[in-house]
Length: 313
Image 1 (cartoon, helix red, strand yellow):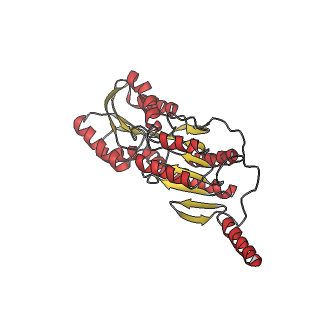
Image 2: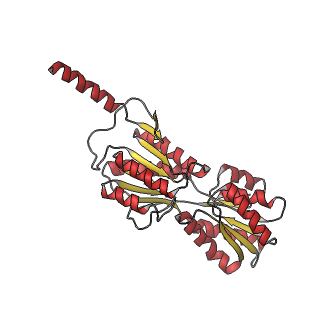
Image 3: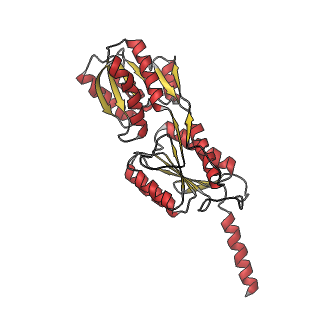
């Protein structure tokens, strides 16, 4: 019996080591490195050593790139990263986070759909001793361990100043807003209005939920109501590209935000006037690297800014 018990223990240890260094997206797991085990000792954080990434949506190139950056860093660091996609559904994201908590993660990286709606689930994670890193968007009302984000206010203000330089003060403009409640929506709207309310005539502001097809539909409706719109500021490139489709051959200046590949092409071809470059892959990688430090009990900065840059033709 002692010999049998020893064999069973050995088998158990083999299976427990097999999960090390894996990246899981919505439950599908693949090896992220060789069969080396996670480091033993030195961890002052509770949990299994795994990191959960609750992302707002993978139906947006920006967040796909952010997720890819995180996964690449997880492979380098040889840690388990579990990625869950909320599909821009705040209720689903709450459930996603509760599921990650039940899986005994050590660090939660959260990119909120809604900065207010996600707060109760994040508070649950904190109460369980899970460290929290927010990325790209903040979690309102929760003191997270680290917030990693671009300066959305400054980026939007710079884009709007450029729009003014092209169409002149007093020109009629429209604003395509992102997902209501998202901190990026709030911050980019603040940056836009900081300039536009002083120098432009904002005739329409409507949400298109960071979505290209919605951006096209909303822009079509805006043009029906205000045919003399001269410029558009979109809170992201997907909506900006949708607006470009709706505008067609009309001479309306469009600026976006995120510097996605499609937007960069549109800027180079003159279909968009400008976009604001962020570094989503760097955001994702930095979030994972910060998570590793937290697991090891290291002190990290409360805020890690990622620079933005205006990109024009």
